[in-house]
Length: 535
Image 1 (cartoon, rainbow, N blue to C red):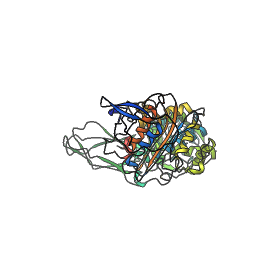
Image 2 (cartoon, rainbow, N blue to C red):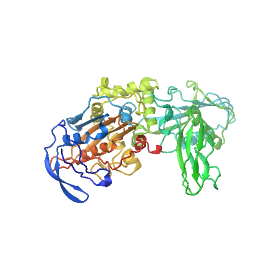
Image 3 (cartoon, rainbow, N blue to C red):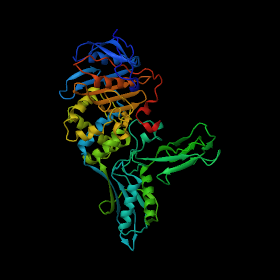
């Protein structure tokens, strides 16, 4: 048995505890040394062991019994393997899949690429009247906000159009009409992390969760009164069915907001206590988001004094005959990497995949885009014959990659001209700023990994992953990939312990082993670790 002790404070979520017998690891990194660990403020003699043995000990955690774990650590400069446990084994990566889609997008589309949305017409304008249809054509912008549609409406008004005699045609034909990814769960569809993918869409705020709207809720004026609801942005597509009531002061908040499958009917049930004055915020997905975008645009036109006399319908723009009345452009793909990767935005991943297909193969489909992403990975040295990409986000349970393939990709990305912008967009451990720390902002705080480890998280039920870059105490940069599958109790604290162990390691002095925190006996649902609005 090897005695180990924690080298970090309990506030970091990592504590000292006895662990099982260390196994023989891969790689020669330092010899076993005798050191001292500090536990609870007192000095305790411990045996400091080599890095591979420390990692072996962490992976002997009982939570891995009957489940699978893979971990590969490599020198980021030389590519030398420091540690390898099941590196060639295919695993479910969850959102570590975004490492493949994001790097391919930076290469294929380029960091300066912008999405756009156009307003077009084919009929003449006479006396301020457009004598035909008005076309709203999307080219995949996942960051389009209500304010962008307002700007488009202003441009239309400035062009001299005051009335549209025809219909408002919502055109999302730049992508195919397959809305949801391969093997996505039907019961995830109402929730913001599983919105429909469309080339014409809308996000309710600067998290850029395209294809969703926000339902804000407040208690009624008195006990028993209906809960007050507000849609953001205002639209006529989602229909709220509100049976929620105002409860007594101090009562439980049991509000539930969920869209019926296959419809835009949103049922609001439960109760809000009368003294709960903080507005509740819940994201809901929209069925057929191109109609949602067109509805918001029509309202923006009306506000600018431009009236549409026809209806909203879905169709294709006769682009060869159309002239442009207005255009809105998105942020660049390089800039998009920050909200995409920091918040692990699934819709951004899938939009980028379809955009790659549209740009590189004139085919805005998952199959075409995933072929482009796979080709990019192969071109930089990833053995793509051993992996399968089924979507861009990792929601699909058909995605299979290896820890070897992830570290190959991470090593190769360092050589790309866009690497720094992409690297900066990865979540940073322990940094509380939401758009810096991202999905790692509450992890590894006050440890050597904080503001050091840049990594991509991943979460599905029974799946957790963490891969990225970390610098050890000797100043050596490492790349690592860790995936855990089919466990019953989340081993996410082991991931954190691995990250802190790598950040703490030095071959120049005794290093006490790090152990995961076992004081948190009940883990929150896996999705909550990554999709913070789901909790």
